[in-house]
Image 1 (spheres, rainbow, N blue to C red):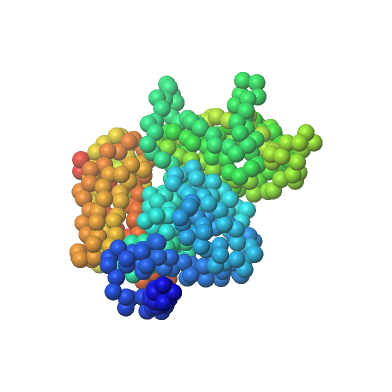
Image 2 (cartoon, rainbow, N blue to C red):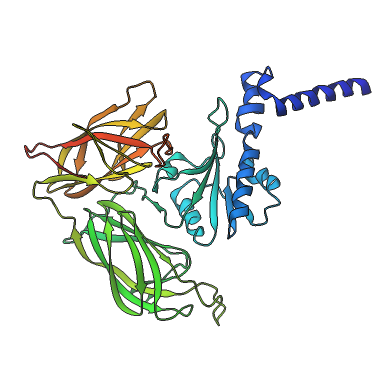
Length: 442
């Protein structure tokens, strides 16, 4: 029996040694290939991922939070053992499955470096969340397992990232003369009442205002502001909008207002304190950072986006590199998600036509109108360099409409080009029923 056990152990040890040194020489069934070599159970690539995390830990000047999935994910139970000498790495089981959880992770990146370990087929960050971020998330480290979709990507979050709003909820019924409405306030300090007015304290993380608008344009937000016990008369905030635009906003006591851009449909306005609270705990034991109180916040004025005299105009928003022109054509690359604005005087149906190419192959290109999917185009690598899109029918609202060109694969770099390149559109045009057509603005 001892001899039999010894022979079995020797065989197992020989298998383990070969698997570690020359794994592709093993004659394995497809299921065993997944288990031992190229699938997520094998752990292939975990050592390389740990080496990357150790490298950034040595360079980091602040703590690093590593977010990984739950039980069974290498990022939770294997990577901590391989990086235990890095004292500034903290691991947390934090599966990210929706926009709210991703917003929480982004908010934390203002305090520390935050990275997400995504291991596909089991512990991945969903693709729809990768592309929902503005600009689209790009991995800072990737490990491609051979002959397998079970790759590992590491994403680093920045507090400046924005998440496009989920468009599932229907727009509210607007009253007479009402063009836009604050539908919800997501505030880490909670929501309160001050007399008949809604009230909230800003100061902990980001405050997110969710605004519904019948058309694109600019809204003026008005309210009564109170300086809080955690700070003085004025606090600086970084203001950003998913409709584009951002600036530093000093808020003092008294009545005040500020302008922000909104899309047709849903927009989110993010207010993040730049200054840090001065008092960790108030005299009454309240540990919340109460920096600015906001009372009765409302939309005071709505200014619709300017409509071109021609009746229709489309132009480029964020996410694009410079235009490249030839003798009779032009193209423009995006870095993952590129925004086109189509502005019309009246509600109408138009057709969008373009050619598209991709640096990462294969790839799928999504078109979203006002953040609703209208078409998908497959680029399989066997087709021509440019693949036609459309004509795709677009039902436009009056004013400004947003058309997103979204790559399902992250951007990469071409030889001798340092730009992150994902998808290029060539000779795009918008066809209308009017003989004037739709003018383009680069």
